[in-house]
Length: 261
Image 1 (cartoon, rainbow, N blue to C red):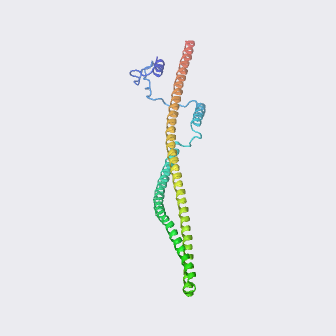
Image 2 (image 1 turned 30 degrees about the vertical axis):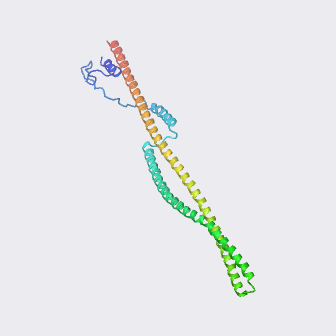
Image 3 (image 1 turned 90 degrees about the vertical axis):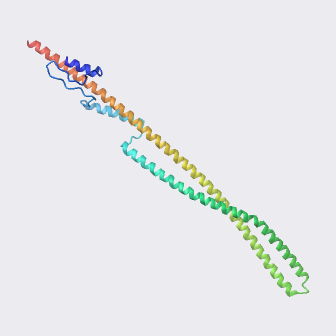
């Protein structure tokens, strides 16, 4: 009866007074049943099968499997911290570039206003050149009256013409330089747009990293639940085998006693 009571307590579910010690047929109290399954390894060869199955599931879920979950989480946290630091540095660099771009835009606006004056200066130089040319013509007409004065005026006119030409060339060079500066500003704006897209990619990678960590945690919880179920099933079969062996031993002992009697 004590064996049957043990089988009922094992497979019959929780009953009132389950943990109370039951009296056996020989008058001794049976050991109380444990509240939780006790791991007893009597089939070491099954460990390889279970470990191979679990390893296959792990390889299917995560390829390759991490050496240590805590080490992987620490490495992910470290990488996440480094990514945040990089984002902060890039953000600071973008602020500096934005201030520089604003300064360049201000300079470009000032230069544009100065460039608007260049046509007027060129027109003024042209008028001066025309006036000087007229003056040269007048001096040529008055050569007979004052050759010395005409020579001086001619020299001055030629010098002023050369100066005007040099000024015009310089103004054209300034205009070309401002055009190149405007193109450089456009290229810088495009570079800043590319950096903004890179920051967006970094943010998306960070979100993907968080999703991966959450999926790993869910996979670990499912694997632990499966291992607990396998251990519980193996313990049930172990207890059933022990009970069956006890019943067989009792039957054999009874047969032997009957033969002796």
